[in-house]
Length: 183
Image (cartoon, rainbow, N blue to C red; front, side, top):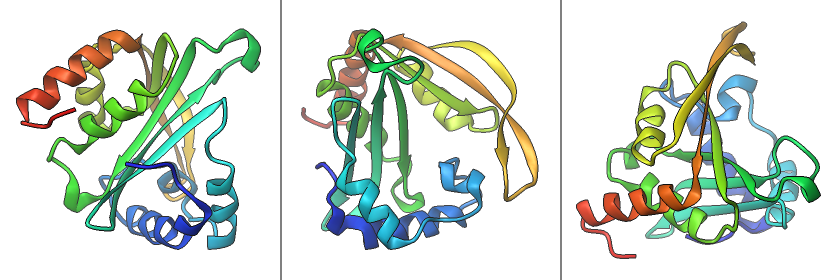
């Protein structure tokens, strides 16, 4: 895993196009119904890591597997909410089911100083709900019609999950040990 660079734009673009066509994907591009162009993705990647955002890409044999990010202070100005981070992650279809999401989240959360992590999960994204619950995050609320899916022309419900980073890290270590990963 490593931080993205502007040079990763063509690879990230191609992967997002792949995810756009994946009916089991719940990445933001699936709701937008389109992928930004390579130059725009390059600009985003260039400025991806800051005091407010951590973002890592995962590669196996130089092939992009997935990504994970943590946006610090997602709800209020940065100075008053540095203890809170919102998770987002994705894995390409052919790499799912291998435990790589646990690896990505472990690295991400290990490099973060937040106290609490949260995530919004589409009501239909059962796999992601199971991952977050396995990490000790609690389902706090159902936000009805919270995100519009341009591709489907309809609103989707999302759940809000939240939990302590330290608990998630402890559970991630357990998951990694169960799968034979060393950290």
